[in-house]
Image 1 (cartoon, rainbow, N blue to C red):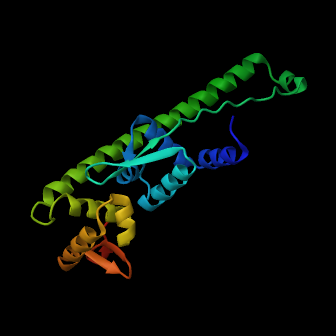
Image 2: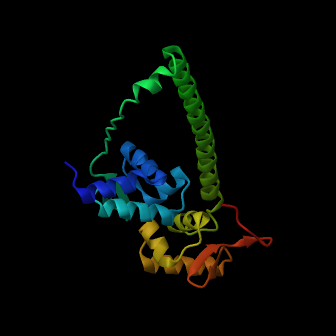
Image 3: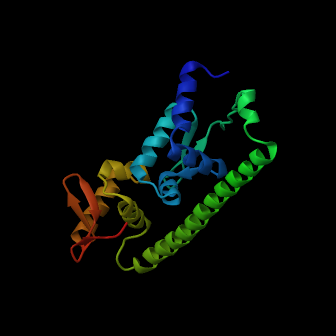
Length: 209
């Protein structure tokens, strides 16, 4: 039995499309913040907010691996049963059974077509993202100092971030983040705007995201 407070949290979670998408992804396997952001094409800061909300509501839990990446997983799955009241008899009689059936077929076909289009687009983008990440790794060998800086650049390609925000997303120690950012800034790879860091502008234009 779900209490009033828990029921309210559940409605807040299910009422947000991106939280539903995150839950769907975590049904497949535990994921860390950057992985969720890249697969769902979301801002890492927004992903953190959603994950922290669902963790406070005790729908998620987290653990940190040996590489200091924080993985999130479902504590319990969510199953909703919806009961729909029968329409008044007069309303049912306005349409024949044949007409109602055809309308149901058209509605189902329309939704399936829309879903397939989205799946094809996402698969295409996932392939492009994988290729872009491979290009980043292969071209960074003489530029970046290992996986830490690759993770920093990947995070900054999503959004301008502060040191504390980068730490929450990547779980890299703050001292190492500050050292790497200083080196990348000195190399003209990232720039700083107040407390935020971003990838360097190229020919007056911000690197595409």
